Image (cartoon, rainbow, N blue to C red; front, side, top):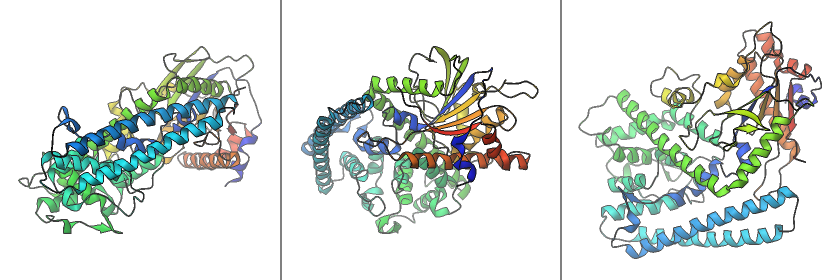
Length: 524
C-alpha cells in the first residue's frame, strides 16, 4: 500500500464553499446496507425456484402426461419453497430492525424461527432433488413434453450442485436433443447461466469481468469463438454423438453445452443449408449471445422487483436515512445544500416517490438502467469500440438504448478563472471502484478538473453486514477501501496530459484536504 493511502483519513484543511452542489455515487453496497438482497449470489441461488417449464401460453406443469403424478408433486413442492423463502425474508428484515434499534430481546426468537424455516426449506430441497432424479430416471418415450420436463428437472439440479467445477448433471444424450434444449430455454435458462456456472462468482463486477473474458479472451477455447467452432462442427455433421463432447477435469465443456443450446434455439441463424464463413459464424454467435444477455438481464430485473417487494418499506426507510447521512456529511453549519445529484450504478430508486433529500430537490440517474425498465450488464468499451462483434457488449454502446438524462448534467464543471463553480464534493458509497467503471470516473474527474479545482472526494465505507446482522472487521474494511481508492486515482493520473501532475495527484489532494476515506457516520 502507498504512503498516501495510509494517511487518506488525515485530511485536515477545511473550507466553507459558496457552491454547495454535491454528487453522490452509489454502488450495490448501498442497497445491501439497506437490506436488499441484490448480490449476484442472491439472484443465482433463487434462480432455480423461479424457473418454470412453459410451452407458449401454457404452463407445462398443467398439461396432462404420463408423468402427471411426479409433475404435480414437484409443482406443490416448489410452491411451498417459494412461500417459505418469502417468510424467511420477512423474518430476516424483522431481525435487522431489532439490530438497528439496538434491541437484542428478540434475537434468540429470531434465530430460532429462521433456523426452523431454513431447515424446512433444506428438507424440501432434498425432496425436490430426489423427485427430479426420479423423473430423470424414468424410461420410456422421449416425448416433447417429457424432454422439456427433464430439462427443467436438470435445471434444478444444475443450480444446486455442490461442486460446480467438477460435475454437470446434464446428460450428453439429452443435450443434443432439440426439445430438451427448447425446454430449458422456455423455462428461462440462458446461455449465460450455462457459461457462468463453472466460475466462482460472488459479486456483480466479477460477473461483468467474466462476460468480458468470454467475449474478448485471446484464448479461443475460453471465448465465444469456441462456441462458434462447435456449432460449425454441428453444421458439418462432425458433432453427432455423445462421444464428440469435450471433457475438462471430468466435466462436460460448458462451451459444448452452450453451442447445442444456441444451435437448437436460434435455428434461423444456424442452418445446415447455409454456408457460413468463420467470420460470419462468429458474428452470428456474438449476436445471439447478446440476445441471451438481454434475457439474463430481464430475469435479474424481475428478480430485483420481487426482492424490493419482499423488502417492503424497510428498504425505502433505510435508504432515505442513509442518503441523508451521506448528504449531510461535512456540510457547513447552516445545513445549506443548494443541489444534490445521485449517480447510481444500481438498478433501484432509493428516493422512492419523494425525489428529494432533506427537502432539497435531487436528481437521480441510474446509469445502467433500472429494474422498472431494463437492467444493463456490460464491459468497459475503452479498447473494443472498433470490434464489430464485441462493441455491442460495451456499456458505452448499450447506453445509447437508454433514455437516461445527460450524465454530464450531474456534474458542475470547472471553468478556469471562476472560483467555486465546480461540484463541491463527490461522495462515494457502496461502489467496488472496479475497472469496468473507470471510464465513468474519468469523465467525472475530467469534468470537475480534479487537479486544479476545489472539488473534494469522500469515499465512505462501512464493514459488511453478515447474515446474522453482525459487522465484519472495521480495520479490514478501511484498508480495502484505501487500496481501491489508491488504485483508482493512480490509474486516473495516468490519463492526465501532464504526467507529473498525474503522478502527484493523490499527494496534492491530501495536502489540500480534498481526499478522505472514512467510516459512514452513524445515525444518532
